[in-house]
Length: 463
Image (cartoon, rainbow, N blue to C red; front, side):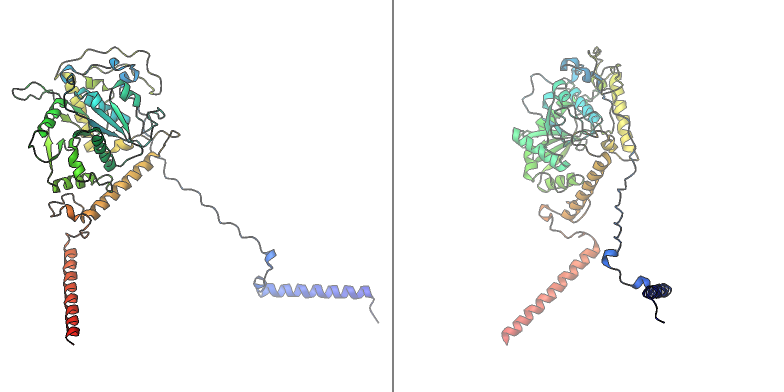
């Protein structure tokens, strides 16, 4: 009996359903389902890899805010509002015939810079002869008053020039130590200065008020430094390059000597640059001689009130916030004390303690360079710890360059037998026995090879 058409379609559908179900169960049981090709349009889009997020270093320890260490100068309207220079240290008027420019390089830490400038002024150096080299790398930001006191690269340009009466040179960009030295030499050449002085910004000075030269009147630090310079200017003095007062914390430079050796090697940006320069000067038969002019310190901090350098009682008017405007009228200027007084010895005691603290600091001698971390949002802002790390890397690079240049690390390259023509020509580590042995073996091998080659060529010629 024939099935009706409806019944037939139902039977076919049920048969196909059973077949498909059975096939699916078979594929599932045999793990063949995952191996079947999937049409591209049905494949799921792969999830994009997770984007890594920046990982940050620990937040650096914050330092207390800096306060200005010369309140009287902060409130001064003119140089006359400052205390008088101690009379026994005043520079001669009119100015001496000789030119006595003094360069002080600055990159960061205003308190230390202001301290060293005041120290030279109160030790008798004519203010108009002092040149601060603003090497902060912030272009004209300091000149235009765009940075705040908490910024490491802040410098009060107007106070230095209008109140303290010194001069400021601004470098076009941040220079390394070697480049800064060459900038000073170049400036001396431009101005026709046959001699110039330069000083470290962390080395305040004081006239030695107990010093007496037999049969001679008292001399300030400036007058004693001038006497040393006059000695070097005498005919027949000799091929002098520099005079050192407490190593190079204060240095008298004969300009042409530095030019004659090609200046400082700027490939050695920081440490070891002085070794390279001084050794090359000796190789050229120039001399570097010690001298004395007064007391020169090496510190990492500043006194809280620079009135002390004027031998006065500190200004008792303290401003809690350095960002506040100065008082309308400066505090009355107290009377000076006498030469070699108790106030003088108080100053020496403070500076001695600061110097001792710097030398004994387990964190290092130059912690003052990274003591400030402010200035965020101001022009030319630099991350404090990052800047310090970058400088440290440049220092290490300079040490590597010095060793590559002279084939050894220690500074005494002349004692090792090297001369000026040996720069960049010696084998690295040439002093080590294994390096010497290898060089001897190489020479012996080259000699044997040369003799064998000559013998072979001679044999061919006879044939």
